[in-house]
Image (cartoon, rainbow, N blue to C red; front, side, top):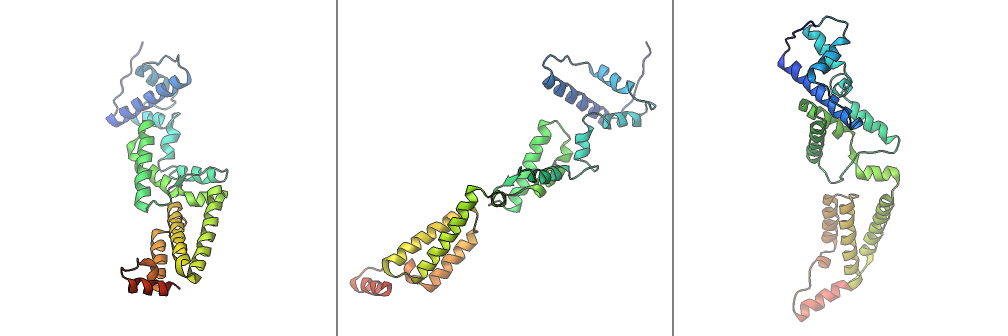
Amino acid sequence: MKQLKLNLKDDVYDMLQREFKNFVRLSTKVDSGFVAPSFDAFLMARLSDNNNFLTEEAVQHLMMSGQYAWARRAMGRDFPDVIAILIAEAANYGFHIAVRHDWSSEDLTEAARAWALAIIKQSQGDETQVDVLASQIKSAAVSIAVVQEKLKTPATRLAHALGQQMNDTQVALEHARGVLAREQLGAFRTLLKLGVAYGSIKEQAEKDALAKLQAKRPYLFHQPSEGVFAKLAAWWRLL
């Protein structure tokens, strides 16, 4: 039997070992009785199918054309937007990647990178691709409020009803007097908080609405002062 000795760079050898481990891991998942070959046998099988000279470049070509190469190319320069395209196409069939409505751009970036890192580690992939995968996830994800609006979910219908009730309460508050005005103010505040919790309005919009109302009718926002005359004056203003 003849022997062949190859001198490989460390990074090429490490990549071949990772591919061998992936082959064993996936084969074992498919067949629990799978008996893993040795690394030498795996490498010999790979090289025996090669029609080129067994140079270092030829070994690299073998490695990059294996059954797992598509995943590396998917997150490399050959096809950099594959994740974004998959998610965008999924939306046409009712699948969505939705994020919290109250996330800032920094929150989304951090979450996308953490998710990408978990994917790469679990698949035993190249961690240098984390940022690429994270950017694809971030660019393809949409707010959950957008998804609910598109799908016309019960939550969306509830949000529309909530918005209408908020407008009606605001109009009623502008014309109400006395105890009824304070009751309408309490209802209006509650509806604003529900709108912020759902994401239909921003916290700043809530503050602006209350500030505008307070400037127009400040006495609704203050408890009456102690004393008979103070209470009488407050009562008179509410009439």
